[in-house]
Length: 285
Image: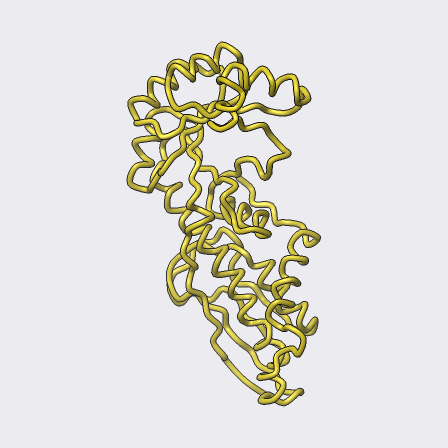
C-alpha cells in the first residue's frame, strides 16, 4: 500500500493553530530574552525508542511557519521503522526559531509516530491472514485527518472519516428504528445509490436479518472467534465482515483467523502512547 501524504492545505491550519496556542499574545519570551537574534544552530532529531515514524510534514511545517529560513533535512520517511538513537532529521537555522517551534514539532511527530507504532504492532500480529486493521472515529478533536494518516503509515487502513461519507447503523439507530431490518430499509430510502451501508449486529439472528435486507458491510460487535467464524460462514462473501469490540494485540490473531475482512480498533488513535523523540543540539554559532 502506497502512503500518500496529506495535502499542505489540510496540515498547515492544524500546525498553525498549535503554534498560536503556544505563542499566545507575547510569543516566546524566553528565547527572545536569552538567545541573541543572530544566533544559529544545527540540531539532530532522533528517536529515543524504537518505533514507526509518522508526521514529518507537520513537524517540518512547525519550524517553517515560525521561521521560513529553517531547513529540515529528513533522513527517513513516514512509515519507516527506527531504532533507539536513529537520526530522523537534521534541522538548521536561527536558534530562536528552532527553540520556539521545538515543542510543537515534537508534539505532532511523537503523537503521530506513536499511533503508527502501535498500528504496525497489531498489523504484525495478524500477518498471514486476509484481515486488515482499520481505525475508527475515536480520534482527537481537530486531528482526525492526521491521526488516520498515522494509522496508514503504520500499515493499517481507514474506516469512514466522518458521519457524512458512509452509513453505519449502530445499536442505538436499530433501537430507535425498531429493528435491524427497518433501520436498513430507512437508510436505503434516505441515501443515494453511491453511499455504502454498514450495520452493526450483536447476534447471529440480527446478522441473518441484515443479510436478508442486503447491506454492503456488517460490523460484528463483541463476538467470540467461534461466533465470528459462524458469522463469516453465514455472510458467505455477500458483504464485507468487520470485527470490533475490545480487540487487543493478544486477541487479534484469533479474531483474524476467523476469516473476517476487517478488524476495527479504536485505541489506535485514542490511547496510543507518544513515541519518545527528541532534539539534540549538534552545533551552535
